[in-house]
Amino acid sequence: MSKIPTICMIPSGYKAGKVYSVLPANGDADLTFTRVGALPSYNATRVNENGLIEEVLSNVPRLDYSDGGCPSLLVEPQSTNLVTYSEDFSDASWIKGNSTITINAILAPNETLTADKLVEDSTNNAKFLQKTINVVNGSTYTLSCFAKKSERKYLRIIGGANFNGSVNFDLDNGTFQITAGNPTVSVESFSNGWYRCSITNIVSSTSISPQISMTTSSGGTGAYAGDGTSGLYIWGAQLEAKTFATSYIPTVASTVTRVAETVSKTGLSSYINSQEGVLFVEPSAFISSSDIRTISITDGTANNQISLRPSTTITNAWQIIVRKGGIIIVNEAYSVPDIKQFSKIAIKYKLNDYAFFINGVKVGTDLIAETFTSGSLNKIAFDTGVSTGLFFGKVKNLQVFNTALSDAELISLTSN
Image (tube, rainbow, N blue to C red):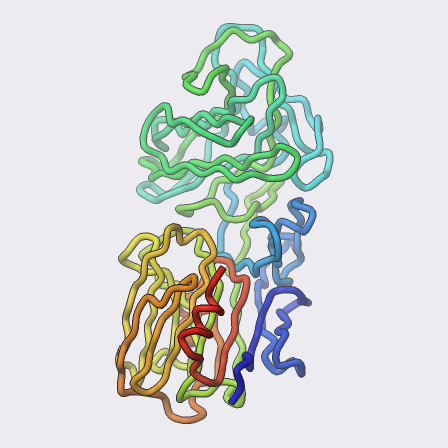
């Protein structure tokens, strides 16, 4: 037995198809990673250590620095950017309303000279770009766009009649004001004054015509008298059939799909003690969801597993499930302030001694007279063990201990 982890994955080293684990040093626990899709090869992006968006080749893991400090392993679902010419707003498919486009006007969030400037005309009208896109009636979509202030600092995203909601974004400080409807709104800060602004809602037609626009105040709702030269910078528009904005997917003349990513490693029975130990994970989730999104140690089936996932019934809560012989013996959910923020979570398992710790606090216990057959747990999976319930989110740290640690040790392990 050892008081140091037998398996430790802190995202730092990687190559195509693999995420290196720090322990064991011989590479036995290096995680297998997949994201193999159709052309173009550059179909996924990350935020690199310089805070810039960077395209990544197929099958290469994404160590993402968007949260600052050390990177996390970014794992995302399949998504398609339905906006063509996502960086070229001068293309004819973008309808210009009382505005013009100055192409390649400033460095974009990927530090290429590809960001355009939306410039107002001098009439007393709304200034906007508009694109009509086919969608599935009744489904949820998220529209996002990167923007940076120039003479104007209020970006206005208008969902339109069939994609309810209008939001004004203050590009000085990343705040926003909803001016119509009930969209879900998100703002992410990027380097060099860029913000990614997004709205989410259910569509009520088979096509929508959202607008990217400008206004002159936080509560502005449309027309104003322009001066013919002022504007703001835009880049990287994206519409996807998701309840949140996934990482940016560049497009040109056609839509582009980034396929789902998988992470797992089997053959670990000599490193996982099936009868007692600790699973420690430092994850964040994209949103609370009714979908099952699991990180587990398992015997390669869904019948025997120790697993962690965002709760499917409680907003902002992590759910701990232990299943033996297909029967759930532990099913506990514990709330956190925000599931989108990283939490340090430890699950201790031992005969008559199951305990759970989150961010330095012992949140629960179960005196379960159950354990697993020696040598049966042999796999780490970012799923239920059988390629279902794939985990999507970020992971900064994953460790497995082959002995049940003390409460003091687990409090220290999970403390910030």
